[in-house]
Length: 363
Ligand code: HEC
Ligand code: HEC
Image 1 (tube, rainbow, N blue to C red):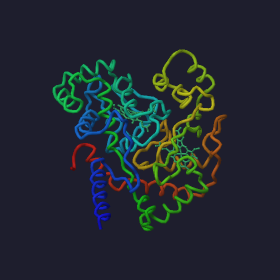
Image 2: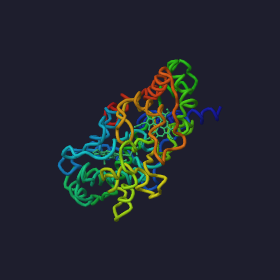
Image 3: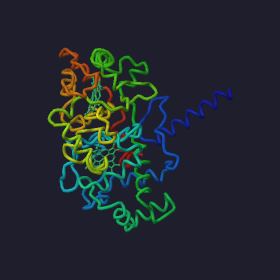
Image 4: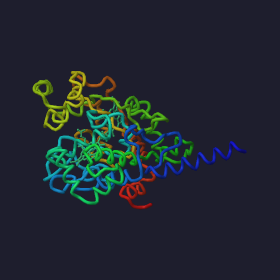
């Protein structure tokens, strides 16, 4: 009897915890790991939320993190490549921030390890939020009374730095989690949770279509990514990679700078590792809620999920570094649509609630 009570209490605690961290996670999935020096508190998450949606974090008060990672657009922006201050175009497609907390590395080329590190980039990027320096942003925010109050309450200091800003934003992003979709109910045993076509798509995904070799589903890490980098040929559509790689090798530009240089950005993981095998290799994106975030690929070059499947059906784009796992698939028309149906079954049931709660409403 005592054991039963303990179990019940544990379940209640777990449920309360789940309620506090945004969307729902299936049993057995722990919330994202947080760095030891940045434990979440309610005040910190609230501060991070405010910062995430605040356009004053950009040089001309027009762009916030949410401009490119908008809750209503699947926490992405629906654009081919990102557009920052003054409509300036970046080099890559905005990935979703939903479940980014579970990724081993951040950015398409993995150049940041933690969310804290990631968050510092866009703030001073000339085509994103355009602040001249982190110091300039610190000064701007310290002049806003509500932030002085918020940082004091959260970190115990009014002379906060960029590290505090990044910590608060990252703590908020760790609440942007959700892994409860019709597919998850299906996996948990509810055979009617997804359509027969989606079920056939799931079989193809793991078999004939070979998707699972990179986007594999693991019950303890159900995010459909191996967190590795592959050249599937997206970048190889039109570029002279030898010339670009030589350009990247020269000089002292950082990966962050190279990632925003037109053309060079297409080298992908290479700009971080400088290893020829990584030319044109990009991070395998997770596939949860993927139906909400068209267009696709690191350059937004595929407009729909149907187009993505056609791309894979052809075996990607042939090039010297093409991943060995990429071969023509000879999928039937029906099989292509079944794969799309499967991916649509990965949209979270609680997405509407999550959009609301991420914006600070609905609780
Ligand atoms: C102008 C649009 C824009 C703004 C503003 C912006 N981002 Fe991004 N974000 C992007 C793009 C584009 C990438 C991918 C860049 C790359 O891989 O080189 C990205 C990548 C990310 C990633 C990595 C996700 C992954 O799957 O690897 C996270 C997390 C993220 N942004 C959070 C933020 C936060 C937090 C802010 C505000 C401080 C912010 N972004 C501001 C466009 C933007
Ligand atoms: C060899 C590894 C590999 C295989 C096999 C593979 N993918 Fe991918 N997938 C990737 C990588 C890497 C990217 C990003 C490539 C880029 O943008 O350059 C990607 C991108 C995607 C995207 C775009 C997601 C987004 O947010 O932009 C979708 C959708 C996708 N894959 C689905 C599939 C499906 C369905 C299959 C099977 C037909 C499949 N993948 C097979 C590695 C793979």
